[in-house]
Length: 172
Image (cartoon, rainbow, N blue to C red; front, top):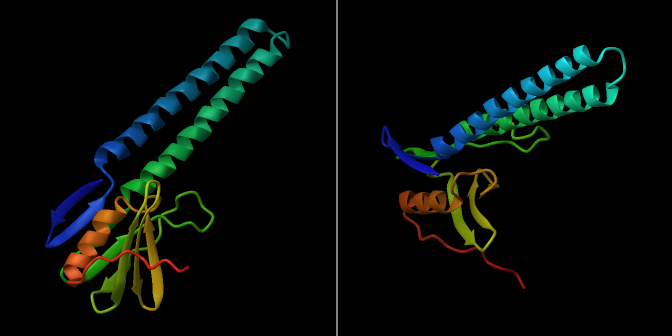
């Protein structure tokens, strides 16, 4: 997670190191996939007709697996690279991954004025960090799965709004 000051805004985003790691893994997976295809081709040429069909098929399956992994890692790295929460004097801009079926597809940027934002809460447990706020009669939930740092975002929202940060009320 990185917090950057830019143009009067505080931007919370994933670190470039994490994003770079995803792209490095994409390159490694692509190279391994290509090597598996070359091994399959070499085995097929060397073996002749059908004598090592099982070996060639195994190399091809490995190549396809690594290619699919490269695509998945690229999708995740791209989504994380485009994810941010910007807190500024006029309001908040949020650009988060969507969960509408596509794996980590990036959503549209949402903009909220400070007058629209209310009810900022932050819940911190061992495996659960959740920032919630209400805007335009809708409760927005930022978790560690869709936001670089829900705790930092909650603190920034409460600070800029000038309200105390509260924990959610637990109903009995």
